Every structure is written in structure tokens, then in C-alpha cells.
Image (cartoon, each protein chain N blue to C red):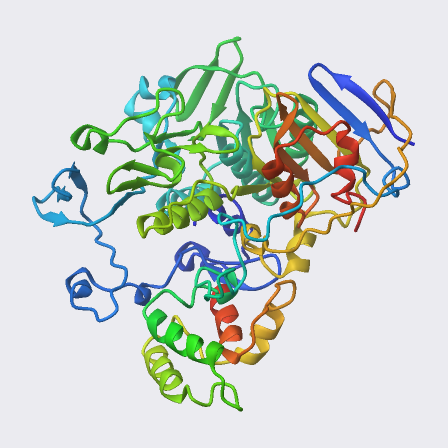
Length: 444
Length: 139
């Protein structure tokens, strides 16, 4: 799993964390970032003869051709492998900035496109050897890395700069007011955040990288981390004759994640039809789990549509943690319902109480519905922004055609089943403040 | 008392604890217990064991998945007076398999770890192997 590469691994007290890749979850329990230890898998040579079958992973080889008529794949060394059912889960490759692609080798070798274990190891090492790191990108990865590095920098003196074109962190996800508030929190983690920053060019001179922004601002730094999104790996489309989605990218599959008769696609590379929310492509850990499971079920005859919504989570420093489900796009109209937070409402607290650091795995609690008839509460009165207004804790609803299509639980934890239920219902609600009551946002 | 304001397309409502003290009048659609697409617990509506149940912690897959399923099914359907007493062969086969994979099926501290893990999870299950399953999930 990748989430710890930009989260927990940076906060480990184990000096050998880059080797062990084990991390202490907030509750103190340890786990590896790997899905299973090597002994889980059967070697490819033994797979055919294994009594009960098994899972084999062939590494160091690339599939270069997929023949959907003959049900065969060809590897880069010419080996042919036949299949009954094939799942494409090729993931994606990090994008780079055009300004860096145009730049010299000196710039490129001082740029990390953060995605893999080796990137984590390299950046971890760099962060204690150099004076300044600049993160370009204001999304999940960029903001999490900025906070992680900023946290370190407060002790080591490492200068951490984050820049992005939006006006605040997570600007494509969070409504503007919340995005701006989050940026203040990222700054308080020791990060020098430059908003509305579009990179024009990067050059290497006198031992420093010089980043020139379109509005004339200039930044000097030692190393760049570009976290500007992902390009789904779709090289097999051509040989297999698979359709790619022009809007979202990725292999276009139906609601059952099927591309062709014996071919399915899951994870980042799948552009699928969500029967509740329409066509989507999702790049999150829990989606990889949920869509991988669904594809597996369908490859063995389940014929189930995408139905169980995946979730995702992010933590930005000790005061901001959130979980989300559905379509959370800051271009949509939103309704946010907030309470004043107490010090207990932190991500750390949530993991301690549920006994798991992997939030998507404790998502099985029952919904407690409060259906009783209640008197109408007094309507809210419009008011200007007030002094000391704080977005410490709350729930944000994202609307499309007056229906809730996405929910962010902001410093509110363990309520995902309720959020999932509201999206599944797909009903219009006259008063979302009443819906917000279901989340008990004041409850400790 | 609550107040709200509008910032462009975004509405923001601030509420006190008292504002939200009254029960919600939002209406949710009652869940269909036979929804074929919905995730189920350990037992499917048709009475079969749901091997995808997260409560099994992935024990039904992996190198000893078949042995686990044989032992678990036997126990689940056992009619013996001492439930599962007719399943010794299946359990022995499962144990023998698991001993070959100490990484995947750690033997020590099982009781202590698994009892902690159960908190917050709804286990409608019975036997000791369910706690082994939980143990596996967290490792």
C-alpha cells in the first residue's frame, strides 16, 4: 500500500524505517506496507501443479501485447501466457511538469516524481542532507509530503516550500474557505506555502535550482518534488483493441469493470461506470481494494455492478484529518456543517479508539439511525463571517442536481457507514443540517 | 444558536451542540436485507457461508484457504453434541498447512492479540478460528 509512503513512514521513530518499511500505526501496532509477506505467493513454476492453486507474481517482466481473441499475453522476452480471465491493474505513472521536462539534466536529476518505495527512500535521505526542498502540487500527495517534511524541518532546519496554482491546499477537492483554512494549518507545520503559483521555468545555476513563476516570483531551492497527478498506464489498449476514456483517462469499462469478454480492469487504470454516480476514475488505496475485489468476484461469475463506494482519507498535520466518499470536487456546490472542535478530535485519537491505523478497514460498523419524529429546529439565520470562526470539525456535503454525491468528514471519524448510506440512497434532502445531525459531529 | 453564511456556491452552517441535540428528521431509505449487491455478514441470505466476509480476515484465501474453508464449514454445519467434534481431521489438516507458513499464521500471543482486535468488529461467529482470522488481518 502506498498511503504510508507520504504519511506514517515519515513519522516513524525507527531509524531503520527505510529498510523495514514497517510503520507503527497510531495505535502502536506495527505492520508492513506490503500486502502479504513473500510466503503468501506460489512461485510461477509451481502454480500449475499446486493442489489448490494460488497466487503467483512474475516480476522483472512486462506484458507488451494482449491478444483478446486468443486469450494470451506476450511478455517482453517473448514468453506467451494464456489465460481464461485477465485483470488489467496497471496503475499509473506520475506526471511531470512541462517546465521540468523542458529543463536541463541538472534540473531533472534534482527532481523526484514521488510514487515508489525507492522514491520514499531517496527523499528520506535527501531530507537530512540538503537545505531546501520544494514541493510542486497542492493535492493529496503534495500536501501530505509538505506536512511530513515540514514537520521534520522544524527540528532539522530543512526549508520546505510548497507551491501550486490553486488558492489553497486541496483546492480541487475542498470548498475554498476550507482549502484556505487548511493552508493556514499547513503553514503552521513549518511549510512556506506559495499559492496561485504557476511554474514557468526551472534552471540550475550556482548549485541551486531556480524556479521562475509566471507572475514574476522566483524561488531558490535544492530539490524539487513534483506531485502533479498520475497518468494511467494504458499501453495495452492498442494491441488489445480496448477503449480509452477521453475525459477521465484509463481503460473504459462497464459497471462490472469489464472491458471485453474475458478482460477486466481495476484500480487507477479503470474508468468505470458507477451506477449511482456515473462515469468515474478513482486514484485511491481503498478504491484499489474495493475495485480489485469486485473485479475478482465478477471474473468468477458474480455479475455485480460497482456499488460499494470506496473511501479515502488524508491527514495534514496534527489538526487536520479527514475521510471522504463519493464525488468530492470543489467545483460542485457544497453545504458544510461545522462545530467547534475540541483537542480530542484529531486523526490520532480516531485510530487509537478503533484499534486500526488503516481507516478503510474499520468500516464495518452498523449505522445507527435516528428516525424518530422531531420538531423542526429553528432555521439558521444568515450572518457574516464571525470572529474566531473555526472549521475544526464538521461534515461537508457535495451536491449535484440537489442530490448529495460526495461527503467529506472533517475531523469526524468512524461515521463512514452513514455517509455511504446517504450516497447510496441518492435522495434529495430539504435540509442538510438535519442530515448532518446523523453524524453526531459534537460527539466526542 | 446556529448561523449560516454563503460564500459563492458554498454554504456554511455553524452549529452548537444544543442545535443538534434534537433528533434528525432526515429520512433514510430502509435497507433491503436481501439486497443482492450489498455486503453481507458471515452467512448469506441463502444460508451459505460468505467467504468474502471481512470477519474472516482473509483466511479463506491464501495458501491454506482451502483447508480453512473445509474446517470452518465442517464446524459451522456440525450437528454433533460437542460442536465440531466431527471435524478433527479438517482442523488437523489446517494446522499442518499453517505450520508451513509461520509468517502468514503467527502462532504466539494469539489469544491476547485477537481479543483486542475484536473490539469494534461485529463477529457473529463462534469458534477459535475466527480469532485466528482477526489476528491475521492485523499482521
